[in-house]
Length: 117
Image (cartoon, rainbow, N blue to C red; front, top):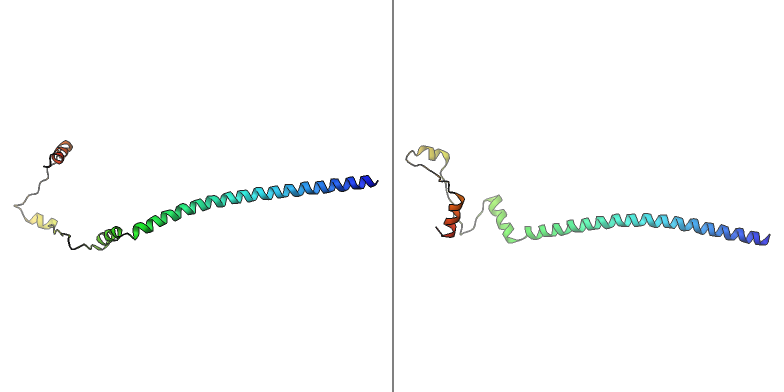
């Protein structure tokens, strides 16, 4: 009888350990999945962070600031030349002036470029 109680106690303890181990395994498996999800999010955020740092570097460069000043505000430097082109009405009002454009073939443009013409 005493051995039966001891054996039942050992079986009960073993079952409890087995169930507890299974519960820990399922908890760890869920934690691994959450960890993998967070690892993917971290990779995505690091890539976005690097992209934003590159944009900050570009936006803070003097060349970009000069380009923005020229493009958005119409500002130039001292060495810039501004051309005042005639309007469509001024061109139509001057009958003696004709503007023709000759279409060159691509090979002619290359030949002129290669021969510095």
